[in-house]
Length: 114
Length: 112
Image 1 (cartoon, each protein chain N blue to C red):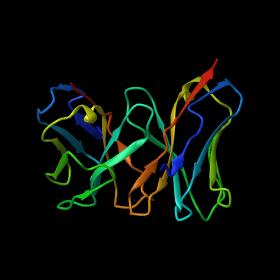
Image 2: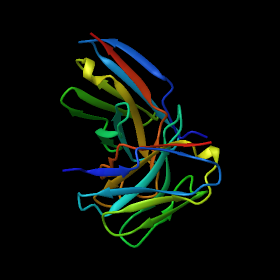
Image 3: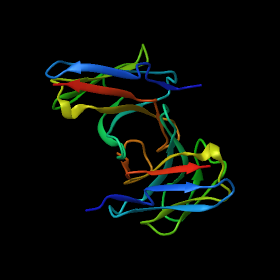
Image 4: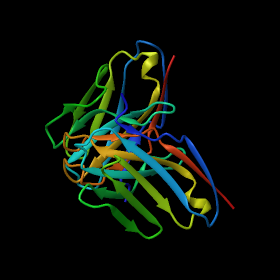
């Protein structure tokens, strides 16, 4: 059982380049999330998808877009990368849209923007 | 301004002793709290949670205590083991369903 998978694991971009981070879960979860973690900081929510077909902004959405492709997949896109987006990105999923449900995290994507 | 604070960036404990990790929060509307554990190069994993209607929740070696009047919670690990060495994040229900607000984390080192 893979749980939550993320690709790629590492990525280096130049300022202004675009890329898409992929996330997939095989637990039949309804809700999915994208977080970023900066050095010495906690995780901050970028976007979330409460259920298939819906997406909403989290705490730090600027510079990002998301797509809930189907129930399994939730992608995060950087249209024009900036050095401030250098971070570790985590995707997570949960049964439903409630904090009472444990969130399962992927291993993360470490992104560096030069 | 930080709503969930973990003021100790690191903690070192001897194997077999108790580890106490602390967390403070500012928003009295928070009604559910979680602890996550994170190893290097891995995603966080859920450890234990507590609802605001309780003041204690126990799961094996892990116990979380909640003091609502002080807006403080703590995670106790007894006895501590070297495999417990990780970063521990405290998180609170941010009010919007499913929106967790995380602290900065405390790095626990358990020495053999």
